[in-house]
Image (cartoon, rainbow, N blue to C red):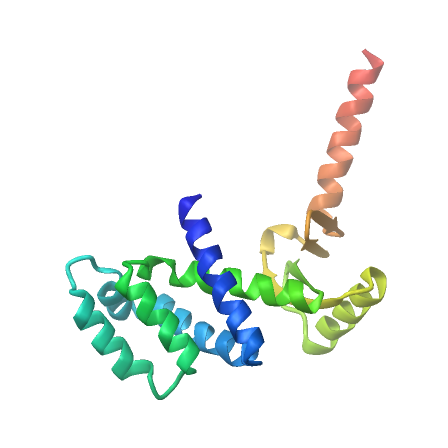
Length: 184
């Protein structure tokens, strides 16, 4: 809880500044790159997160790695987070920053789950249909879950649209259970 609050505060300050200087997209790309490195390179993650590595050494290495690859604003935030011992909040910062950007742009995030991979044409058609239905621009993340058996499940905000066979079977089971209890 406290960590979410810290990440949210850093993200809010970063987003407001990025918005002021019209570099929101660049900062988001910077954060995606840095988080990608943290998530995919265990040695880099260990170096950045490790409490036994000195602050100055971390800052020096991060500056060498990223100073020519990221915006000055992103670099400044990284430095501050390292100085304040908040390096474990970098991933949360990125996540909160993306949420703020979506809210500002009126974009709705949807998680689409299918039992097998769908092609690009199908995914575009689905997003178009969702945008028309919901009246908002949609950013979607597509995942595969073979346990769905077939169909699709779309989760956005506090809603879940379950058009999967597994969901239909679950609904049928609940209806039968309810009808049986009602007869007794």
